[in-house]
Image 1 (cartoon, rainbow, N blue to C red):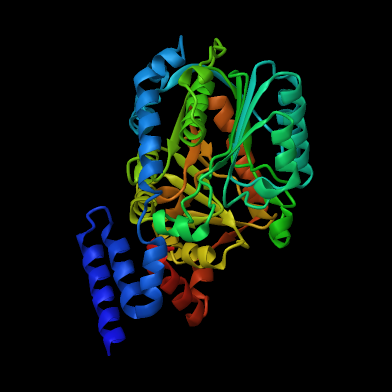
Image 2 (tube, rainbow, N blue to C red):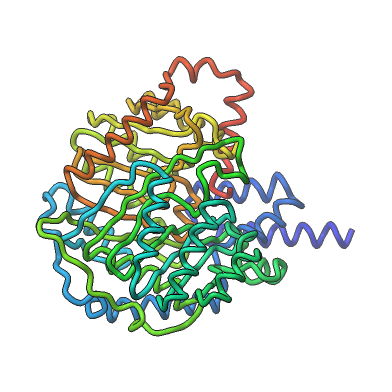
Length: 475
């Protein structure tokens, strides 16, 4: 009787806690109340493990302190940079202005980029740039495997360190958990590479007590000599992705970028490195190359210590700026109401909205939650394509053949609320055209989804999709 009374008290206290949280959107609050009520024992445990978005008071304070230092010295650290907002057509400026409000990174002119044709070429160019590095190499990956790609990258970093180049390497404590405990990781450290674990797990019990295991650093950052950076979706792993080989190949997109925007990515990396390892901002000062002519771009970094819903707000603004077309690729599509309604609204007003998703997802939960949105999107006029050539891992948005957004952020609640992400927003007709051509190639390898297909789903599938979507905000 005492146990039952105690449990009822805990459940009631958790419900009160959920109702008092002003930071939760109504659907998220309802989902948590449902989980706690319907799963009275498991629900308490689930909320304890995943209910609060908190990386720990100490870590949060360190990250906030570093962010304040970067904001205070941002312009001096990047030296001579020029604001490029005036070069962006007025229609799209609001997206760049909003993005600037997240990290304080302005739209900068004078950038250049090369779209990598495939994952193998991207990794070969990264290794080539590391081998040519003269001063420093900074890399941060969510997933790093000890396969051919991971090993070759580690060897290149060791070669660079042994010739006197400062190499700073970070890998996420969960996504790269096997690699950071591997002999190759230790070999890099012994060769002079400075290694660090982003959001280390350590003792899982203590981590759970202090924060959450699933708050991760999902960024993919590579910087060479403060002159070159790579932006996109590719982790440090073979496309065959042997830990989930049945879904391979992983299909990614990468840009090799130079220009003032490299300095912003450098500072984003610095925010992670200094928060975990210490150091001074002087270690990250750069004088980037400026291209004339060059396009306008800015880095957008998001995470659980940034403003809530910053990414879905940016996506919704991008949708609102579109006049003719929007094409989106993402492997994980679990939108909140902001993004879902923005997609529908754009389609309703005549914008050609196309959404490209994997036909077979490595997460059945995500696949179900994604498909629960199909009917209303299709009825609004959104065209949905399911990619058959592997797991489409590229995260891209193109607007009117003028603006592109790509990086590590998925259109899901995890990227919106729980992960540290890194993205590039740019305005350039030629480069956006190349990215659209890549998106068209994905569509050519896809099956179109028709409203008749959705109507033909069996009742149990529709019920499963909608049940999963109901508790989607807590996944």
